[in-house]
Length: 507
Image (cartoon, rainbow, N blue to C red; front, side):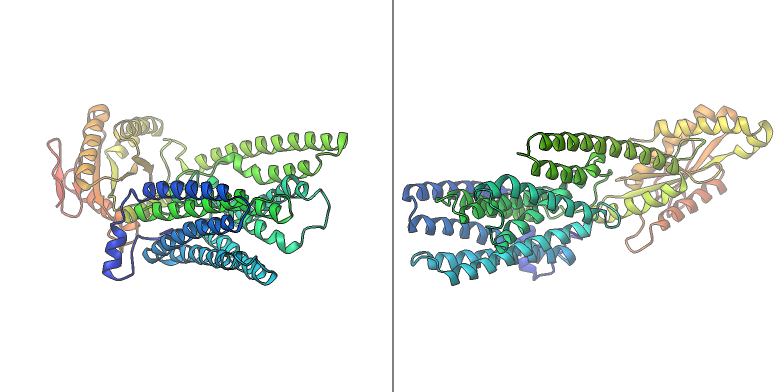
């Protein structure tokens, strides 16, 4: 499944079969793919330019594509929503590809005629459209960028790569004459390049993404290379179709391995990366466009060299400007997300992280706990010694809390002397132990100044409750800690508390 929860809506037997898909299926497919491709290549090379070689090459492609189609259908059965639609469209594209190869295979013995070629071309165009639509759906679901930026970037990259493919590969293959190639012949590589470019841009912006996405990208790259080479062969530049056939066969097996990987890891899915996309990637589409212009200038003598130099300078400038802008945005974001006095995260960041961590917790099954923290006696200290002394004391308390929270725990200031800590992937029993450690260390380090802390601990929220209910439960537990004498840790939902002694967990 590409997106959503790994629920298999099919019958129980089918669901059980899919859930028990062996994790080594990908490795087994890899061995089969290499063996089948190598064996078929030996047969084709030994037969030379003959009908037998053509039939063998098409049969090899059919074996790879049929395997990939079956596995894509299996993934679609186990998926839901856009994930099911994406994998179904991929399977439909492979079915169209198989139909086109079958037409060519059936007519190979008698020599492919014009009608058979037109029918095959129609199926292959449909296959390219299916691949492109499936990848676009993947991208639209994740949306690493806001607005239309991602679509414009992918379009710029696609056009740039198309220009490079034409200038470097296709035009030289037919002698550099303009207008010789029928426009319909360019549909195949254009669709394949577009699908590969969008998939590659998605992989880049997700900082790699799941393994099956990278394999799908590799399959589309192989398909694009095969389409360009096949067009070159159609222009009469090659008599032996072995190159394009090998690439198409490898693409089919790679897509099969991608689907097998998805089946073997039911929880893998497309989602936004935890961090921001690489900052330098923002300048890549513009740099690619300038590079395409520079490629067109090759062979124009001094003028072409000047264009290439200017393009290189502009590309470097764009990359550096993009990095500078990214640093400024990051610094501005950090300022907007932190409390200016203590350096702890602020209430706005708490709301964002609470929704994100709650979604992650519900999706993965990991537990999420919240600590509501309030300083005992801080108002009296503030009133007696002044706000400057109170601010210094507040900084000492925050330093203590940070020093004794674990790596990955998050601390927020939500009021004057009120704090919240979120503890991802933490059960209530462990969160209570962390809270008790914070209470004890604060009493040791700043207790002589007349300040202690009370803490309320909650785990959740329940599946159908809003994320904010977790903070409400922790706050209610904190209220009970304050009411029962302060300098306490109380866990929700039952008012079991701890003081200087051992922690009493909630039940």
